[in-house]
Every structure is written in C-alpha cells, then in structure tokens.
Image (cartoon, rainbow, N blue to C red; front, top):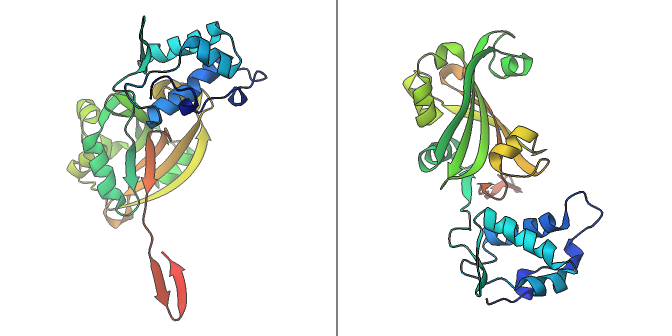
Length: 264
C-alpha cells in the first residue's frame, strides 16, 4: 500500500467535534487501532498530510499533530521526502487465555510473558477480600499489584490478595520474578481449582496509566478465586486486561442426551 487513503478506512464521519477529545487525538486513536491490529502493515507509507487533511476535512496542522503523536509512540517513523511509514514492530501480538484448561493456560501465560511488580504490602482484609478468601474482616493478607507484558507492552494489570501465612513462605524478590502459581506450589498451597467472573469495566485513572490507555477506556475485568486442596482459597485476583491485546478462547461441543441436543 503506497499512500492510499481509502485503504486506511478513514473518513470525516469518524470524527466528532462535539466530543471533548481533540480532533487530532481522535485521528490518532483511529490510526493507532489500524496499525496495532495489523490492518496497516509494517512498511506502509501513509498518505501525506495534505491528502489526509482533505479527506478528513480538518486542517493540516491537526493531521500533523496526530502523525507526530503516532511517531512519539513509535508506531510510525517520519522521513523528510519519504513520508510517514508504519514501524516494523508496531503490531502488538495478542495474548490468549483458554477456558478449556484454565490452570494450564495460566501457567503457560506466566512463562511466556514478562512481569513487573508495582507494589506489595501486608494489609487487613476488607469485607470483599475476606469473603473471597474465607477469612474474617481484618485478617492479614498480602496485597500485590503487578503488570504483565508481552514484548515490553502491557496487557494486564493484576491486583492479588493472598493469606498472610501463605505469603510469608516466599519473598518479595521471588514475587517480582516468578509466576504466583509456582510460588503457591512451593508454599504447599498448590492450586487445584479456580472460579472466575468475567465482565467489563471502564479504566480508572491509575490502571489506565499503567496499561497505556485513555481513562474510561473499556477493559476486560476478571475476578478469580484460586483454591488449593480441600477447597481452601489461597489467592483472590482482580485483573484488568486490554481487549486489543488479550482475549479468552474456549471450545464447545454438541451433545445428545435422551433425545435432547445441548451445547456444553
């Protein structure tokens, strides 16, 4: 593709001057999505500033600010005489989890992705955490805030609570470098089952900053209780995931029982 505006799937109808978001940032967001999804392949030369300005019915300065913002995020490179070119590493790979074998999927994800520990401390369990971990309110738990990345790009913000007697069996240094499922196994609290709830949430301020998205952006929210032998809860986790970088996958089968057809 060599400067073909139609291939960008951009039009003035995608912009809304009534929104508080400036027009240049609206253009940036649309083009960022095209680049990160792979719709605009690495090496693609984007249309020139004047051509984009005519297509979008905006000023050239507005287009220039959008392209400069893309360049600032290293999604494109700008060259005098050659134009604006989509960067070679701009497409972000998708991280996939699986419902079919959840625990194995979580272990693989922990091995294939990078971890950044943002915070860890002991605190009294509030009512929600106490309920999830079968504790009494005020019982000590370890709070850990972590960021998971793939190839240096964040895709999930994770807050975990672990009963203090279990958390005392591993160090902060281990928590910063080792998947928590492995640490729980070493602490004689190997996870044997998990229960989880999946929904959607608007990105709050601190999580938006950590994940590199706009405040209020839609995120996938997953809450999960991990249980060890005899059903003891050993971890409660609340995770927020970027939907453009993470998705869950599951398969289902058609079943015939007593003349009835069902899916499960």
